[in-house]
Amino acid sequence: MEEDEFDRWARELEQQMQREIENTYSSIVIREWLNPSNMGGMRDADAHARYTGPCGDTMELFLKIEGNTVTGASFLTDGCGATIACGSMLTKMISGEPVERVRGVTDAHLLEKLGGLPEENEHCATLAVNTLHLALKEWKEKT
Ligand code: FES
Image (cartoon, rainbow, N blue to C red; front, side, top):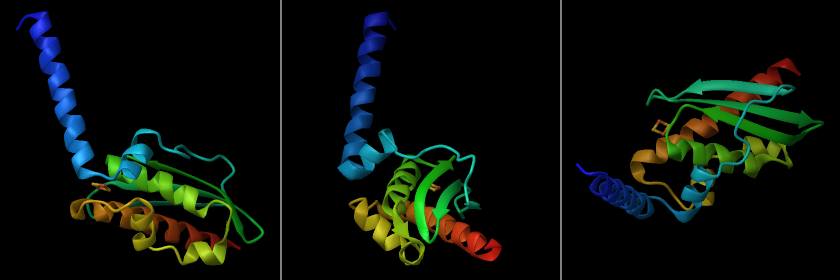
């Protein structure tokens, strides 16, 4: 394949992938996936959990908790783009919120904030929310 031909093929493939992503995911999911907030570890976290879902992907969540308020949150994941979007949106949703309110966060809340996910990706929201509840449980046990 000549270089021009290869470049054209690569560009068309990229455009096709982009169209497929746009047809599959909400614009919010795409934004959070491609430009995630709060992705990374946290050195002085007050709560931390690492959870592997049934799909084999893992999320790690770090929380800074002052008094009874979640003052910061960050995440790491080896999961799919939808999971990155879930971690990003979830950490934004809970930052600045009282722990009691954060305890009530469900995967349905997260899915609503993301403008939904395809059915085959809904478990990615469950993975993120389960990791959050595990972190809160561990925090409760040590305080
Ligand atoms: Fe496993 Fe998204 S596919 S968390």
